[in-house]
Image (cartoon, rainbow, N blue to C red; front, side, top):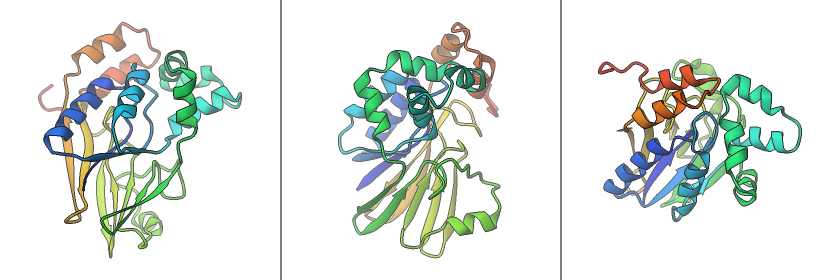
Length: 238
């Protein structure tokens, strides 16, 4: 089974469409989506609708989905989110219908899967700590505590920085971010797991950022300068 592992799309439909075309070329058969479909960028409804058209896909919840739920149940102020992240969540609340919001609210926080004899754990943040950020420079002793050798692979996202750490019979993999890569902008970060030979291949899919950058600039988003800057961060060709 060839499985595409995607995380942190964040309303970036251009990046998602590019990844899905790349995945089709690589003969990906199914997808695991590690949360944060919404927040930051401008097309959350298109992202969710596209994900829900994919067959045999497993999706879990990210912290930005939980932010929407908290706004809806009155435990978080939308203005607080706007000031910190820009208007991405407000857009999601305006654009998503009741069925789509219910679908997001019902997603699991973590998921254990079995494919071809492999035990696979899906998380958004760290295992057992859904809001914990794991970076390539996270202290070794913290990483070690998170390994569970009942699983062959543990996949996470959340930090938008990809890495791969093996320990004994378990591999902890952060697949990075499709829609908001923070180490190198404009390259959607994701990965392909081939369960037949236990191989994981990280991928970077380029996409045209011009439409999105122009749309953000013209949107008067409170976070527009930051969001545009991420699209070309650390690019030698920009």
